[in-house]
Length: 216
Ligand code: SF4
Image 1 (cartoon, rainbow, N blue to C red):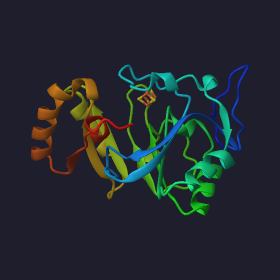
Image 2 (tube, helix red, strand yellow; image 1 turned 180 degrees about the vertical axis):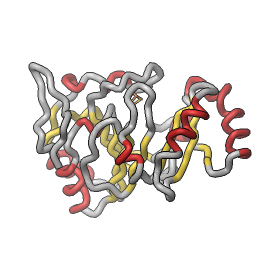
Image 3 (cartoon, protein in one colour; image 1 turned 60 degrees about the horizontal axis):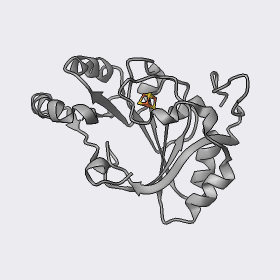
């Protein structure tokens, strides 16, 4: 699949075939949030994001140029040395890049492929699970909303409930719906989310359990 709008600057560009990707960090841990909470998963965090969430907790991912371009072979080789059966590709915004090669190589070694994305860029890659966390600053693409396994809306203030409902109208009929308190506002927002979910049970609560467990 051709990526329409990959990351490019005058000094740095990621090849459109996705054979190398700007790798910010990779680690084996437990998926802490959303549908796959509690599963052991290898995280691949790609650098580069222009979505600009003011509450972003990985701002150091934004500049793709500071993260080394790393070959798919090298990334997949590391995964293959671990007992990991699931890989979460996250960012930054991973859909800035063509992820076809990465996911096909991961599937060749028998791991499930999960992505965490704002869905602001065209979909590439072969995914077992797509988690969309939509952002107000760059809207998600409707065609990706339709195929998402999970819509995870971060609740930063009360108006985000209405915003969550607007996006729930756009997903497929089997898409799981989650509300997750933004970490710095969790004491204020979690009680509101509890009430909201009890009154609107199509939604479920997602918590960042990895932060409670002090794991990455
Ligand atoms: S989309 Fe994700 S990485 Fe990008 S600014 Fe928002 S929270 Fe941060």
